[in-house]
Length: 171
Image (cartoon, rainbow, N blue to C red):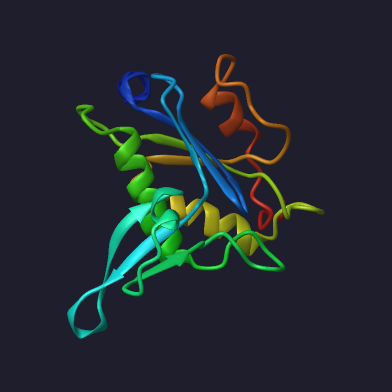
């Protein structure tokens, strides 16, 4: 079974997600493809008050439209995460855009890296929110990383995962 999992890991996409309040950078480590823009989600109001995604990133910001609402799910005065559901929609669209055209046989491995508002470390709630966000957008396994920006050329998911510390863990 261990050999099978190692083979799955070899073909899994590895996604590195860096989140700032006014920027989100998502890197496909194996291909080097990068999405790097403002974390904006444009929602268009349709019938019955429902909203659908009209765009992501900076493009929708340039065209004012009364039927479109721009939302940043990573902007809050006290924490980096303000809206889980909209963060999930935004990250899913970014990953789908980044991996577009690739045959996806297995779910990706994902590293979530909050880049600011982490003084004193993440709380157990923040840790859980970032981990759940990755799982909800389709990650097979998730590591939460805190520290300096990782280098995509020396990136090792195994090492990052081995050093991932859940703040709620009490030995």
